Image 1: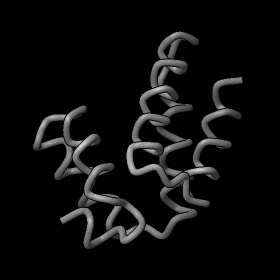
Image 2 (image 1 turned 90 degrees about the horizontal axis):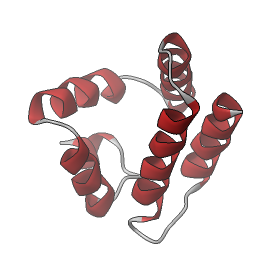
Image 3 (image 1 turned 180 degrees about the horizontal axis):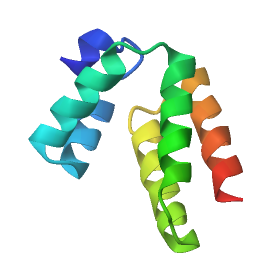
Image 4 (image 1 turned 120 degrees about the vertical axis):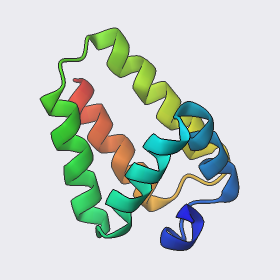
Length: 92
């Protein structure tokens, strides 16, 4: 399960992510990201967001959703802070 592959994510965070996507998408993303180190995960996220054409409101909504996930366990980890900075750069 995701929690085993990513020791930094709590069950609360995993549950919130699962509530946002269907089971197949979750499993696909879990398989994909399980094999990546942190830096490659960030690059993959950045590349995919850059590849899509998002309107500012969509990016803002996405960032708010990420904040909900990050704060769901009341612990804003270093990795989450780093991803938040990346999302901030992408948005602006």
